[in-house]
Amino acid sequence: MTPTMDTKDNSQPVMTPVASKRNDLEIKDAKLIFESIWRELETEFGHEHMRFPKEIILLGGAPGAGKGTNTAFIAQVRGLTCQPVVMSSLLKSPEARALKDAGNMVGDRDVVALVLRELLREEYQDGVILDGFPRTHVQVECLKLLVDQMNALRREFYNTPLSIHFRQPTIHIMVLFVDEKESVARQLKRGRETRALIEAPGRTENSAMPEDRPTDHDESLARRRYRVFKEQTWDALQSLKEIYHYHFINAQGPVLEVEANILKELEYQSTLELDSRTVDRLRGVPVASQIIIHARQEMVKRLDSYELEHGPLFARVVAFIEDKILPVVLRHAISGTAHINSEDGLLDDPLALAMLIDVFSERGYHAGVDIHRIEIPDRIELATGKITCRTKKVFRIEIRFQGSEIRRG
Image (tube, rainbow, N blue to C red):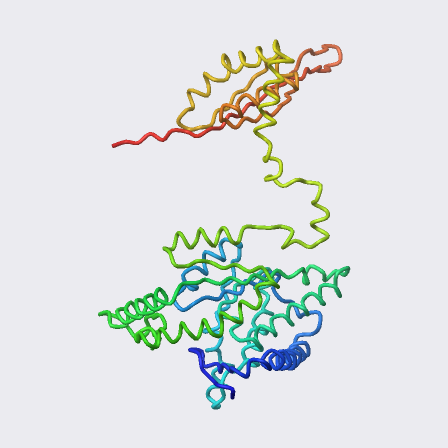
């Protein structure tokens, strides 16, 4: 079998060599490519300025899967404010155009060089979405080598003032997937919408227009583009599944459903993202999900113990709630928030305060108590002018619950 060449919509060559030798050749080529690019960048920027993003979200997906549609939402979920790095746009850069104008193809080396140079920009230091990379096995191997170098730099600068610039890298592989039928339908729909915008009356030459792809107007080309994705990019991304955080997103449904899938997949996991030293420092503070696992059972046990072991005090607390707090709560039924100030000595007992909070929790409210101490003048010595104060203790009780909205017709 001889190697075959195919091209993608970004004019990159895709080589399909003999299967038994492909991986060895790709790894060897990737190492040569990456080391050459790394040396060039290190010479240009300096060793201590090889600062890459803490978090890289590699966004891939079938044609029409909604990468452009969902990029802003993914950025919002991850708290990223910088613009994404979109490979199709990067390949229109002056550097890429110069290669094309000289009659050259934009191959793996050029793609990797463009990506690494772009990722060194300061605005990406906290994190960035990289749309459309990697697309080939050589690019996959170069990505692995980049992460290796990032970890090596982190170890080198670990106990230096520069350590904040070389944090533990977090790599997410996010694949938006639709089947062939949906992909083709979305591509053709996009083509119709783009053509309508271009032909709309009153459009000027300077009007911003979406890219008008030939594949969006020909079903056979749209179908072929999908199959190229499945045969090349899909395989490349799958090879990273066991190495980095991998998120497979079902993008078949409507936008809100896809966003829910993304939200679930990108749920924050601190042990995967924080430096190991930071994780150790925080280990003694339990996460909320741990302390609420048995919260209901513990509350039931406490309430029964109040009745069985501290009946008289419990009765006084319940009477205080019914007489002093509930009348105020009822007047705030619409807003869902009531504030009550009390100087009742009953609340000086810490157990009584615990009872009050538990009773409201059991009834579906959220209760909080803040103790406020106020110095009140009590006596003045006329001979010396000395003022003696007493401390007034005020218990500020806040009760929150689901309010009621009044609608006017």
